[in-house]
Amino acid sequence: MTQCSHLSKIQLYFIDSTFGDQAIIDLSISLESLSNISFLLLDLQKSSINNQEASELGSILASCKNLEYLTLNLKDNYHIGAQGTKGLFSELLTFQNIQTFILYFLLTKIGNEGLVSVSNFLSQCPLLSRLHLYLGQTGIGLSGIQSLLYSFSICTSLSNLQLGIYQLDEESSSILVKGLENCQSLHTIILTLGINCPFEGDLDGEIVDFNDLAKIILKAKFFVKYNIQANQYFH
Image (cartoon, rainbow, N blue to C red):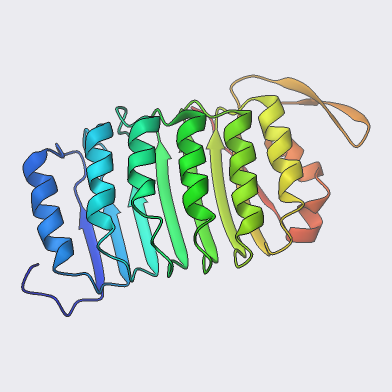
């Protein structure tokens, strides 16, 4: 790819591989020669990435300052935790042109602290209009959700949101649903929530037995206002 400096759109797949030192070096050389690309899809699911390699990945991506579209698939990288997430997204804070960002962070260990790092990055993207964010089995709770909602309120250009969060507790789920009501710029929301067991909730003064969190969305006030589509997901 070092001979293809004119390219503006790149799709790279490293699925089910070992993202070791040599792979990082090769990717770094390739992307540095393509610093003008505006579209990047990077699929690194099941690549055995650890915290240090996640931070190094951030340094590599930082050279692509003109990106308008970024898909980053880090699904099934169990060794990425809060430290690696912070290292990755702290390097991307210079991205000012991102309009579409799609992130798969399923089956990692980012936790609340890691989601705060993601949220900080999102709040620094003034042109972001389309966000797809998928989180599951990541140890996320209330503080992470609150940081995410705050970033949504900062992203005044954000109009299209697809958000999938699985294995979220009742309190955090309710805060999320209610918080989305305050995101006035959003025109389209596709919200996927999942929980492992039934619970009772009080919505609009009514006690309801919920089999899944989708029922909260269906009864939320902003369902009609923003045409919410509720889905179900279970591990």
